[in-house]
Amino acid sequence: MTRRLTIEWPDPVPFRGRDGAPIRLLAVSDVLEPTLLDARNRDAIAPVDFIVGCGDLDCEDLAFIADAFNSPIVYVYGNHDTDDRWKQCDGACPAEIHSTAIRHLAGVSIAGLTWPGRRGKRGNRSERSARGQAMRLAIRRAGHAGPIIVLSHVPPLDAGDVPSDAYHRGFKGYRWLLERLKPTLWLHGHTPLAATSEWKVQVGQSTVVNVTGAVVIDLLPPKSGPKTDL
Image (cartoon, rainbow, N blue to C red):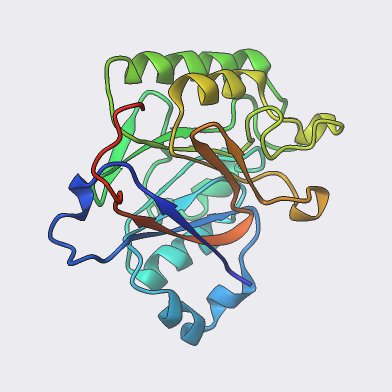
């Protein structure tokens, strides 16, 4: 089942001219959500303003989802997204988003943290690389106010991860970035849904969401204008 989530977006600007309609995004990762294969289910979700991928979803499946909804897409690599695997569908999807770049879709700012280390069967986790990503994004956002969505494959430490499992433990550098940047949304995959009791957690002002499979997220305009404490 495709999960759904509604979040108040602190900035009213992206909602101008939308006649009260929310900004809808579809977040996917790791496994193809079976309900998305049925056109009737997709029609019930559409229209989708944009799609985000949080890693380890086959490139063919990612391209299928983007084509089926006719929506722009941004994504990050997961630990299984090897270069050889992605060369098979070269041109089907745009390049992944890096931590030094910020994309803007439907007036919403989006940053990405692709897998920080070698990818594939001989891949590795790199806390050092994760810290480097976090520092680069923090520097990139320095002096910029306003809400942002952060995409990553692995979640921040103690925020949607499995701390007792070294393979599914979050990154310390990401946790530092979460507390420093305070994004409205942090979307990730990697953590099996069966391994945690909650697929979304609140950390201060940030909602951290495990989008393994698929989650439809509606961004609603602020009820009382822009917030100034971000």
